Image (cartoon, rainbow, N blue to C red; front, side):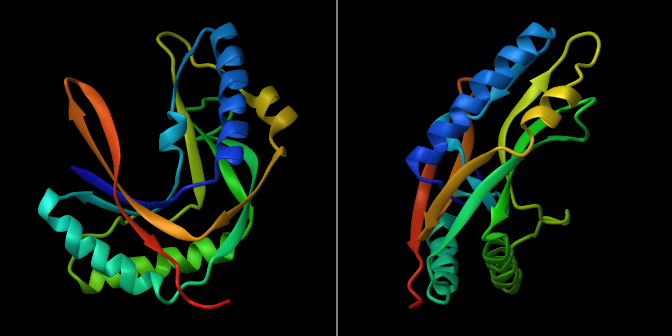
Length: 192
């Protein structure tokens, strides 16, 4: 099972993001592309990619998360801005960013990365980016250009969400379909 530690936005924020997915989906369809959107229950801000692990690793991973979580205070983050990677002119990924609270998210990522490295878990070598993946574009012929759409709505603010826990998510293929589930939750327990 592929495991990732992340933060779950509150339901109001997820609802706003799903409206954005619907709107962008219509634009992509009109321009001849398909989209594969993250299901609302799987919208998270990834903190640390753990990779392929056996189910029996969950208790050890949860223990490390709890150790880090004891040193973290709850915080708020504001989700704003839309981007397309690698570029709006040839988007493969559609993401939203963090406008405030990003320093808390990045500090938490660093703590987790250090703790899991010390516990001999492989780490992701790519630079960390605090973004929430909304979906992927799929084109079968020419590429689709979203430059005008991203410029028009790229600065939208989707609101704040309070963050008081992190979750360990697992994903695996069952009958050729990805199945995601929360394997563990860890509250932040440091006093503010």
